[in-house]
Each structure stands twice: as structure tokens, then as C-alpha cells.
Image (spheres, helix red, strand yellow):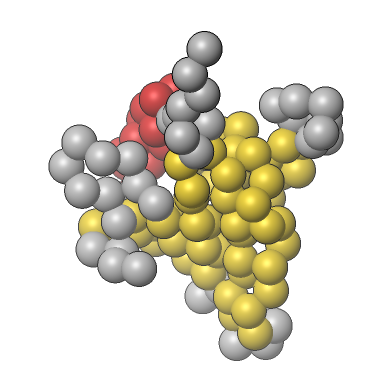
Length: 120
């Protein structure tokens, strides 16, 4: 994992909206990493619905599930008052990792696995 791009906060909302609109079918792992809790997996390889940032409420959100009958419920993981966001994006390639750090230093790592397109 090489998270080499830290995005400026003013670009988060539009960047994440663009990613969400252009994502192929993808699955994610959501890990929360903090000194007081260690490394906790919140979701493992569930369908990714979207990533977003609401600047008005200062909340980053990743939503999973809800795409098919197998995963009908949407889980929303929220990061309140995020202060930093990194991605591993290469030019022209959608990210495989997104890392968000909140005001307390707790980090949320989203590992993204893009699924192969089904041929019809």
C-alpha cells in the first residue's frame, strides 16, 4: 500500500463524488486504526455504494451493501471532523486505498477491490 497523495480538504467533496460516479463494481474492507483500539475491521469485502464528504457537517462517509439481495442493508461508516485524507491514486486509475484521519488521530482505511466486469 502506497498512499502518496494527500488531498486538500476543499477538494474532498468533488473528488469523492467523481470517484463514486465512476467506480466499477467494487468491494471494500473498512478498518479503524487507533492507539486506544488497535486495528479493528468494521466491514470485510462488502459491495461499495459510495464515498462522500459533507463540508457543511464536516463528515466523511463510506457506504457499503445495498446493491443486491445478498447485501440489502447499507452500512454507513462516518468519520466526524476529518482532518486529512490520502489516496494511492495513479493518474487515470481509480484508487485502491483511501485513508482518512479524524481530529483525534484515529484513522479509517478503506481498501477497495475493483471487480472484473461481467460479460453479457
